[in-house]
Length: 504
Image 1 (cartoon, helix red, strand yellow):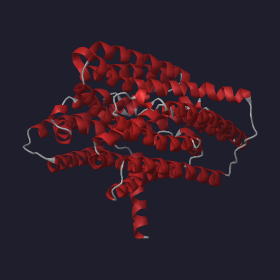
Image 2 (cartoon, one colour; image 1 turned 120 degrees about the vertical axis):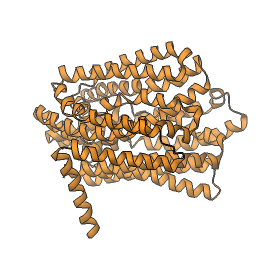
Image 3 (spheres, rainbow, N blue to C red; image 1 turned 90 degrees about the vertical axis):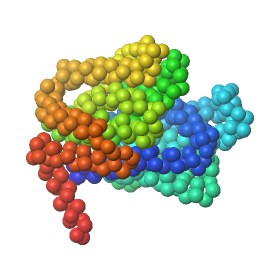
Image 4 (cartoon, helix red, strand yellow; image 1 turned 180 degrees about the vertical axis):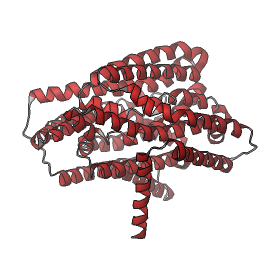
């Protein structure tokens, strides 16, 4: 049941990600054209501004880890107690966030001095709408982590899909009926809040767990915060590593370099989103294996998942290396040609890092997050310092290269930690994963890159056909020369189930 749930959850995640990419490439430009650049800017501004105050402080990942641990121990009472403590903590945080947002409302004109008086008035309305739904939805944040711990992957991922697709459909209908930016913000908030409530109802019904509101234990609260504080540090370090670069470029370079970096960063975000489809799906399994001390099974799982992740991630990265220059030219114009190299600098390390998710799940399961947090923080600081040094002369490319160096350092420190402190045989992992897969696919990609450079084709259709041919060849090479028996059986099993469902 667990394996089936994981597989279905992963499939839904990839469907959701594919739709997100299509939406980003097609729907966003259309929406900007419908509401205008100014109102879209206000929408983006209020969304980004509120996001600074709505971090879950690392508690969602903490909840998943603790509940998975208690379930592995067979202690349902501790699960109810844990949910009682976290519910109270979130209620306190939500109250604080409400007070802070309420006070900031009266200083919006001072904070955003570059806006016109008319824009400030529209911003205040948007701020009230988005802020209200954000505060209401924040209370339900623990439920997502609890659902992951209970392995309700299908339900959780389906709800994520409903939020994104449902929001877009309703916004498109509203704009076609002469709606405006206020309707966009209202629909976004209402769908998010409604789905959060639905998520809570599904969890309580399926898990049959009732939150113990009366429970309070100081020691457990301290343990909760000691773990979540390190997760928060990792989140902030990762966020600032890239989020500070536009500010650095704004100080030491110009707006053109900011735009070039942002285009490459947005594309990198799509790759990360695709790779993150499996994040958290295996944490309950890893928690059980870790609890039993079965390191060999964890390593076997890490290799199986890592190989599948590598197939997907390298297809995107290598495909962009081969066709990215033409894609950038058609999508945003020749002005952003340097964004091609920004993307490569930011993503090439992910070919290694994003295939080691099982090892990170193990870090969560064994409460060793503080060791990885310090490593991320060190590399992030180095990346920021290097960016400040190279930004005046080399702009976006220099900052992307500096960030890439920091990412390499992070992965070196991670691999060393997994090997020495976690007891994982990383040489065995890389031998059976990367060293067996990357060489032939790299040769194929290099050949595709030089072939497409000399083909006299132009336009989107020619590019899409060329990328499709490349992807088919990529899959054929994997099936004939790289896929092992387990991976082939996985595909064949999925296809046979699909045929059975269609015949029914």
